[in-house]
Each structure stands twice: as C-alpha cells, then as structure tokens.
Image (cartoon, rainbow, N blue to C red):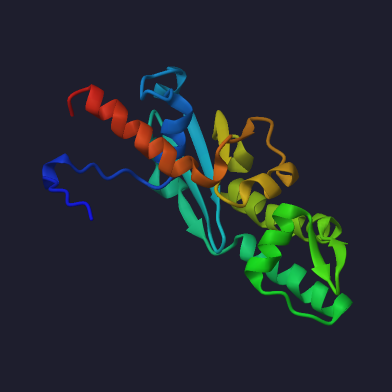
Length: 193
C-alpha cells in the first residue's frame, strides 16, 4: 500500500483532450519539442468505446463552444458486427470478444478461424461518417483546425476512414491523453509550478 499526501494547491486540472495536445508538443522529458502550438488552432478527436470527444484549442486554450462529447463510439460498430455475426453464424459474441476479434482480425467458430476484417470494413465507415459529421458541424468542415489529432482506443481502426488533409493519428492513441497529461506534469514541475 502506498500513501501520498497531496496539497490541493499542487493539483492542476486540464481540459479533456489537452493531454493529447501536450503529448504532441512535448518530448519524453516534458520539454517543448514543437513550438508552433502556441499560435495554432488544433483539433483533438478522441474516439472511445461509447463516446467521441471533440476538443478545439486556439493558442493552447480550449474553445468550449467548439468542443463537445457525443454519444458515438466503437460500441456502435461492435453492436453492428455482433448482429451480423449472429445472423451469419447463429451465435452472439460478447462485445469484448468483438473488440478482441477486431484487433486480432479473426474469431473462432467451431474451431474455424473466421476473418472479421470484412465486417470491420463494412461497419467502421458508419462510425467515421458520424464523426465526420460532428467535425464538419463544429469545425467548419475541419477548416478551423491547422492540425487534427485522432486519439483514443477507436482511432487506429477509424482513422483510415476519416478524410482530413491535416489529420494525424497519434502514435499511442489508446493512452495519448494520459501520456500527454503526464508529460505536461513533467513540464510544469520543470517550471517550478
């Protein structure tokens, strides 16, 4: 068991998505690696299981009116794939098994490896289209952002279906927000704050 005492004055609350932004701006030691963010407008799209969060930052400040969470995510794709597998094979895979199959590319049915990629190819575009509609609505077709970073557990599968010339997939998408928040903490500690 570990015990920590934390002074509330040492706590810094950052907005959703800022960790992703910090992760793109800072190196692994928490030092500034890219300075252009101080004047840039950056969109962060975090695609999760049940929700997708859109955060727009101008000069490192969150723009609340251009940021929101929406109730669309990987679960919508999982449920569509689950229904089709049930129809095709007469079995209902649990949603976490659908997720595993998406990552591995297959699932087993009576000992036979079944390729899940055709299901993903069929259903992932619907999630991408819903996210695209939100980006287009909030960020003027994406044109408000100099760069758009896609993160979250659903980003690797969804990103190929998202068409923004300034769009980039984060390297560590499933942990990008947490990793960036950690790097921001390192940055702040180096500043003595």
